[in-house]
Image 1 (spheres, rainbow over the protein chains, first blue to last red):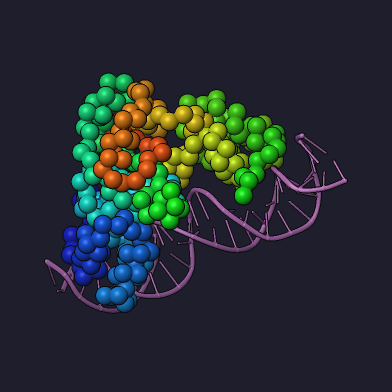
Image 2 (cartoon, each protein chain N blue to C red):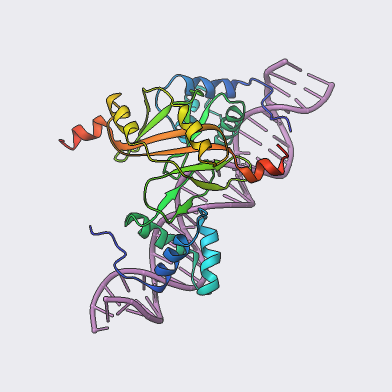
Length: 133
Length: 133
DNA sequence: CTACTTGCAAATTATTTGCGCGGGG
DNA sequence: CCCCGCGCAAATAATTTGCAAGTAG
């Protein structure tokens, strides 16, 4: 019943550190590559297992916006994201969370809302510059 | 460069009809099962191919919220969704789209926003009833 | 006619899992 | 010491793709 993940292993600590120390929202593969620089024998399965455990524990978030793969976010606080349609990069949006949207949704009769997610899609500043816009 | 999908085949028409005639947000498999009732020899590959073509053409939307598989929405207008954490069902939320959120995001410097997506997570009325809440 | 589309089946891709060993508490 | 978590490799699950035959326009 109790979620697993009782032990703080070297691997788990490392994965959490990697996620906490980047503002990008990396894929499991990228985390795996980073982790191998420190623990060359770490396995991809372990990376996935720990990402799952950390997610259950509410330490991190899993994002899957449009792509066929997941990205992970070391910041478990609800916040909004911007997805670049050109390069696929996911960045944080620096604006407050609008909890009142949840109230509005509940009033429409959809059900009891516990949280919401909001993503903006467009072209990031880097890609706009490259395209000479 | 030009996206394919020039021909309106029986298969493509059927898939579009199925999607337009349901308020659920079905998976590719469900659409496949429905389609086979009319065209028993249709293949799953064709279903996926046409879902891709229709998506490119802006006729339908692909949703992937949390799960390992995609759901499809026959309504291409932007609108909000409610995802039930118990049963996984995805329903439409009957509230207006807040375009002003996009302006707010752009002002935070994240980039040029072309559209946004908003999902609410919680427990749907059916599941709450079943749990006796 | 003639590409575009299909059905079929094999291939890919991301992720999950079984198993026997190793190390955290 | 005990059992959870690891590395490894094989297994899934969803989706994609190559190819020869069918068909919409």
